[in-house]
Image 1 (tube, rainbow, N blue to C red):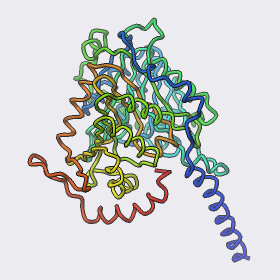
Image 2 (image 1 turned 45 degrees about the vertical axis):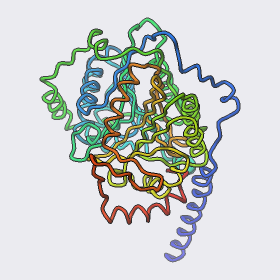
Image 3 (image 1 turned 90 degrees about the vertical axis):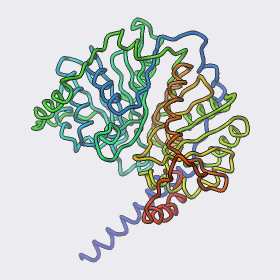
Length: 464
């Protein structure tokens, strides 16, 4: 009897595995294309303006600055905070940010918080119960697992942004993890922008667009509001005390003069995003980035942790490189922590070089997680989009397209600092020697693991 049960159980498991493979994996091998309707309605001129906008902007590059500006913004909230993140990892950074949010909720500020359900990690956090049981907090999760719908398993929520009333927006690629704030031995360099709306009476601000996008998420059938469980958070008081002690000597002035002094003017800031459905998506962000690159007159600089390109990506690189100077700034094998994604890039790097793209790889401590693009001397693009199939066709993504020569200059100066810490890959697929920079060598184990994993990443590149 037991053998019969085990045999039938094994048949059920194998049958389900085949079913999940057929309907949950294989469809992603044939990516969606941008619709004719979207292409017909697309206008490159929508990203440009000849006059100043209401939105001013600040680059958040430094670890301490990224944390301090978050806390300052949250402390300034009067009515509403909307926060989106891909994941939350237990540690000082997440505790400080979540404690600041809880303090805001305790003074009556309404908070909406959304995470990915599969990799978000919030349920294991010490402040989870304090959040979901707070009457001023609404907590949402994107794409919960449904075993009967395996085609939804791969889709993830990858957005990272913070909205404070109609006044402030922080958007970029940072996860809520100590590595992204310099609070751990292992560090990850990332990039965000802070947008300050100078006219709260006007609706002409990108903050309104991001808020509308967030509300679309909250009202989506693919997003679930999590109910409280009435459990207490025994560590809440201790964490609040730790948070207050850490920031007690900092000045969190947030008046208009502060933000005017810290930000620069923009002509226009435009939100671009992927569809929010939790299955195959039209590559709407990728298409708009492609068209902006095609519009370049002299130079395009792209920064991404790694690059996984299909024929569409490679043809885009070739078309751009044939016209202007195209540079890619990315990790090296020694610095990349993402073996599945980087393994594909590493073994297929020679194919990318044939497109005419100039590749530079980071050689110093830590790794780069930055996602940005510079077009000539006026367009800057910052957000959550990686140069991979997942960001193009599977995940939610948000990017800001910034038409601003002053900001472009600031961002280019920061990007050039990373170029100085990077080696160029020659046409022979080897580093060009540099007297001022020593190549960072990966371990033999990592090299072997990279080639082994690349077998699988090559087969399943459409999911990476």
